[in-house]
Amino acid sequence: MALFGGIGKALGLGTSQGRGFITGLASKVSEEIDKDLARTDENVSRLAELRASRAERDDSTNRAAKAASKLELQDMVSQLGNDPDAAQSLIDQFGYSQAKTYAQLIAKQSITSGVTPAEIIGLSERNGSGATIDQLIKHVTPIIDTSSSVGGTRGSVAVGFGKMFGGDEAAQKRYESQSDALIDAGGFRTPDEVLDTMPPALQNNLKPYVLGKLPDALKEAQRLTEISINLKAEGKEEEAAALKIEANTLMLINQMTKSKDDKLTVGEQNSYGKLVGTKLGSRYGIDGILGDDGLLVDKNLSQQIRSEYISLEAGLKNKIATYVSASVSKGTSKLDAYAIADAQVSKAIASNRGIELIISEDGSPRFELRDTPLSTILMNKDGTPPPPSNEPNLGATVPPEATATEQTPITSSSLEQELLNTQPGSAKAETIIAKLMQNKPGYVRPKGY
Image 1 (cartoon, rainbow, N blue to C red):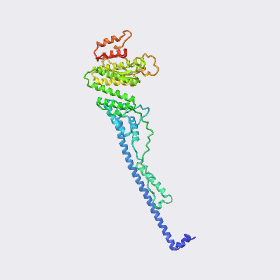
Image 2: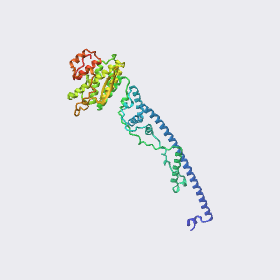
Image 3: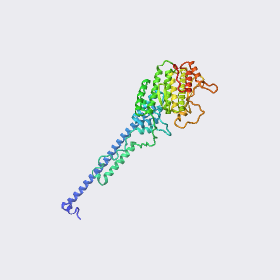
Image 4: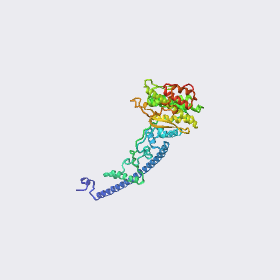
């Protein structure tokens, strides 16, 4: 068969001149194919270098971002008492940016108040291993994947004849393989960030308004009162009540700072007595009306509950008064002494743990929390009353000199007479008043005492 058949003959391709044309054409095509393959190889190399260059740039960005996060997190963790769990908890609840701001405020408040960051946050306890800074760095740092440009070329990698017979697909694979080799050789590969090993964030009870605390006691009390009103309007009764107690405590502190008396005045005693009663009512769910004289217990409660409440309140008030008086005699300021006593009594109430006031031989007072309940009766007021216990009530007990014994019973009338012969505001007077309140529910403190 002649070359190209009839068409070849018609075109004269069967002649010597035609065969020369075909040979020349084939050579020309071969040259073009070689050139396109060479240009394809150059294109593959150039694109691979470009991708490796982008990976190097992104890797540098990643390293810089991680370094910045590390410095921020190290600072944040140090502000939170060197506790990565605290940082993780804040980040989980408020986001990284807001958590950094809160950490700074918590650190300042911890310094001024002496309360640890974990206590300010209300951080729950961790069972098992906690979070680490390295895990937090991975958690908060946005990372660019240096491998993301694979397959991201626009158009064909191959050129001209290089696209034929699967050449474009082969060129794409060579591009990826060559660029991968350059990225790995340069150490620009984004490592796999495994976050599933980080423990879950701990819960916290941080209320952001706590971090807006003002240094002036009266202004802070006014701020908390306003917040308390808003919370109550939102139906958050328990939280509003707690803030109201704190506001009243600050008002009492403000009152003490203006007092020139080294001992607790009658007005101050009445104020902190009302606070103790309110805390007891809130802790044990005792209904009543808060008046100028404290919490007026709901008359529908059983006499046992009412008597226990009154006795416990009187005992705790007495402990505070005795501690402040003894501390002042040892050189502690009245305000500092009250702050310590209030903190310890508040802790006892919140945890329902017995509290005992111990006066050492040199007259220095200290509080000790016990493992026995502060009040078993109030703790079980909504259920079946617990069986009688021979253990003392460590909340309501008063000093030995004010305790009636079987051998020498002390009547209310004799105590009232003894009170009139005692210096108003003295520790002894407070002890007698506490005993009278214990023996006579509804007893009213005499004017001037």
